[in-house]
Length: 328
Image (cartoon, rainbow, N blue to C red; front, top):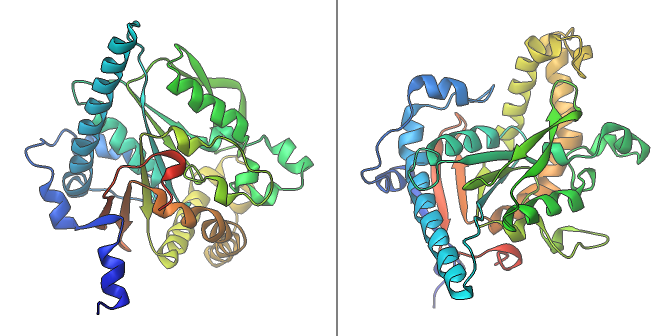
């Protein structure tokens, strides 16, 4: 009789790849980025290398290129069947994961690589930070300390935005967020005009009905994703990365007088470490455990990182599922 571990492995919904195994799936895909490109794409606390691009992101861009081509072909068949003019509908990729895990770097690198493939040159990137409620609303509701938690987002507005994307609307506006002022930008927006691919990056983008304790929305952002990625790391490493990033901000962004966190710029290193750990313990770590990590198994692909930010394993879902059905 098989033991529980054997049964679990047999019925796993993912195929696991070591870094070396995944890297071989690059096949003949050429390196399309330079060291200069990576300097522009790197996050403040993540020194991604060309080796990481070659082993992890080139195979992933190849996989996504196959998916996009297949989806574009399906839309052409459907429009031909319905005898309608061809409607351009973007392929939507969702990227989720904890604060400080490197979602933005993953999104920027994928955006750059995917835009170099010939059949989908226009790739836009949207962060869900712009869909946070303005600070004055968070303060009115007494949830300023829960910024980044599901209730701090204008979810109906975010769902409408993604629904309009998938409806093929010509021009859509996405709100912007200022990390300097830690608030919504009220006098500007991001224009999205019929891209081939849209990458949507955010903490809670993979949530569905089981994640809401009160009134459950009828439609979720994840329902509109064609493919989803979860960037993963151990909680211990995530906390350390957050502390390291906080210390770098103390020497850069926080020094600016307009910075919402300017008060932290004068902290000594031990004081800054203590503040960062307290923020992690009471806010970011709680959000990770309660809201973000439980959505990991809904992703079509999971990127697992080492302490040094390099990827050591990639997990790919065996069966491509979308929306509310991606809960197995």
